[in-house]
Image 1 (tube, rainbow, N blue to C red):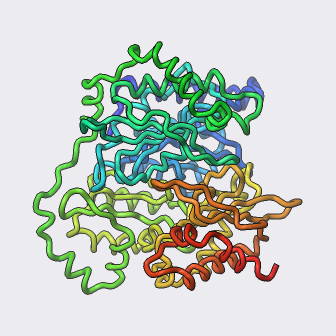
Image 2 (image 1 turned 45 degrees about the vertical axis):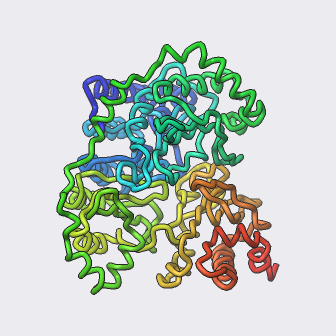
Length: 550
């Protein structure tokens, strides 16, 4: 895990002091709302319905136990005893007091955390695969390149005020777990014909009001040109991205209006002037890679026999193992998912007590690191199979062992009208009602891999456009309605969901979801996934069932 040097720490400390002065000036009336707004946004501070919301960066989803304990302390001291993990691997507090935000930022700086560029029209937190470094299908660990990009993007003066927010994701595995095709820039580590690893570059992806799948702008890019090529893309976007209409300001609109060929020509022309001025050397790559060396694995971990006994004797443990753990590249180890989707909890929320307890468990059972996933869960990346049973027992007591990873109740859900000032409709209450209706775990497991994503507005923070089932809250003359889509995906074959039909009323959403699932269970072929069935039969059978009485 990357550790700040003196320059990193000074930069973050100075930003805290700067924002403290800005906040004091605003509270004294020396800065207007309009003057303060861009300052607070660049420091992750939104004004929501009930209180400010502070978004904290989780660099490529990687945190240590000291940082987790600090989040618990902040939750207790400055908030209402909980925090929220987002789809971009960040952390949010929903109830801080404005005058105390500089104190929170100072607390974060003491454990090498910050909120810089987690909002505003700037380059946001770079995200990556939550199984990076341990997954069996990995070409190369993407985290060193995420860190290089993080350092390059942080407070980059040329791109301080972009036309709109800008997001980059990096994947190093055959299976894209970072949703790279749905970002402004997506990077895949790939091998060329000679077996040399470089980057496939995608551009123009994004969700929100106008969802678009990214396109390949460069099939293979040498590693040394990573930053210079990214900079060329950003420069063209900064020059020609629309600033007259925020709904058309994202790079996806620029690429669409110009066409990929013309946009690529402009980037290549710009790159030719600058490609040799920002070369990423082998020495620089190696120095960052040194922060991500594999931990000291137990070479005898695979010899354990106790796991098999527990697995055979305890069906509940076996079920959890099947759904909430993943293969590890080192024999005798597993990656363990901590489900933040217990039936009676808002998706992605954790209490201060849970945060502290998880830090303790990470110190005991893994190498003191915790990862955040894109589906608002957590991962212990390196757990010995001999420790799985004991860990499961303790996670179960903490309500973090619901065996539903990748199932229909592992929903992505934004805060909606409960907190967000942009929302048109509620999300958390609807998610709770759906979970209550799907309380039979055997039925949930029988349904299998099925992803529901639900957003309370067109901004699409919960990625409803690429959910196998997408739910989008809309406003109709002051009442809450919900549009449904089917067939979306954020995996390798990324796809946008197809709209099922007219929006349904709030009290009909759960019935609509159970009707969709009923059609799937009754009409699927043997071993056919929900997504495969939608591809095979289309949306008409589901549409007929949902709107039968309309």
